[in-house]
Image 1 (cartoon, helix red, strand yellow):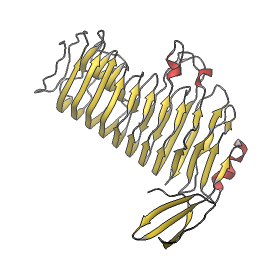
Image 2 (cartoon, helix red, strand yellow; image 1 turned 90 degrees about the horizontal axis):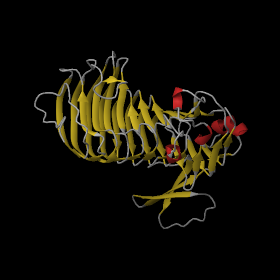
Image 3 (cartoon, one colour; image 1 turned 180 degrees about the vertical axis):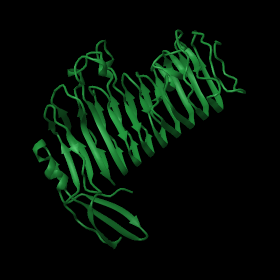
Length: 377
């Protein structure tokens, strides 16, 4: 149970108190635990930021805050045990620049979205259909580097580019995040608007999130012991490992009980041509695909080529389980494509039922003993 920084007293359950402060009550072995929540530092002006981080309350309430153009909401160097609450409408000025608009770093941190709040980034001011490949310089939105922490209940709307990145985190729960960038679906709109990305982290669980964007719903480039579960992905590029390379490793990743709606891909593992690394102990299970437009499942070692256009580079993908990945793709899509160097894929288990695609593509490097309907309708 997570408690605000507070003064805590035990009294007999029969006593009744009249309190003017917020109370958190819990019955504990015949006693009544009363946690009196501190008021916290009400951060309504950007100039108060450093004072808020030093507040003895260790509770920062970000209320209707406007972050000036080109400035970063720098929530690094937080006191251990700090609670950050977003409430009201949080907005940002426009400037073309690189970097992150919000950075949060610390240990035993809780980042909470209060009911009715909105982090409204107004990304349309940057969108030009080019993302990070040209046009306006577009900042990424939020990076967290957290240990023994929780991020819960954030409502994030219309980021210029990448939305939420968990880098070098340990023992982190991310839950009930709503990434709403559907306004970027229009022509010339959002591009490279990755939803939730994870890198260099361990023991991270991402659950009960909704992402509507124009790039990967979830992507991981390195890390261990990661769970992505009970999430809904709409409109983007699917759930992705990679692009892998530069010796990076992803192992012990579980993706389960997710729905992928009208994405270009369902699930994907991609490694770059000429690069090294390792993908090991991976499970995709109980994944439902709805109206995927290019590939239901794609595993390829020749990225950035998209399909069997060039020879794949040897890249080990070991102990892969595909279990009950099912659903539909469009007529112009391929149900499955595997395009890896023979011998690089080892110990795979495969159970999928993907229908609708009429694009026949041959596979390469499928491990022996796998009955995979490549090139079949």
